[in-house]
Image (cartoon, rainbow, N blue to C red; front, side, top):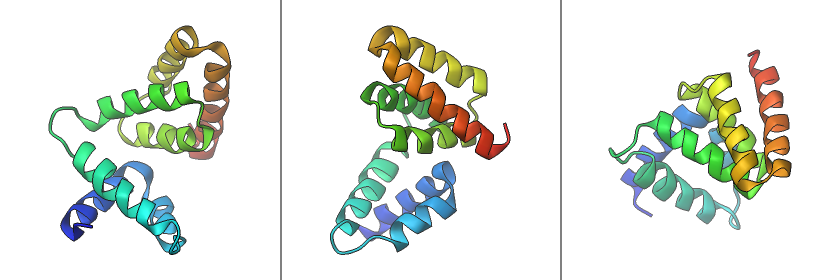
Amino acid sequence: MNRESFEKGLKTRREVLGAEYVDNSIKNADDFNMPMQELVTEYCWNEIWNRPGLERRTRSFLNLAMIAALNRPHELKLHVRGAINNGLTKSEIQEVFLQVAIYCGVPAAIDSFRVAKEVFKEMGI
């Protein structure tokens, strides 16, 4: 692990997903899953999210669509919150999930809307 890349990724990860969630993920990691925490922090959150080619807002659009298509509700919940933190509006998130319905299937979109509503409620939106 490259410590500098990890720290840069950790900073970005906290800014997008929230420090409390990220810090708990790192704190609760054990010998089994700490290598995964290090991998995603260094490569996903630093090497990809910190690339200059797309702004965070655009990366959030992409993540919402891909994670919804994969029907991964836990990760989707996290990234709906991240998308809000990155400036997406409720109506923009709605549009992403409507498009998911057409290209990826109605069940994936229905679950995505359900998850997003939970996040909006938690965030008071």
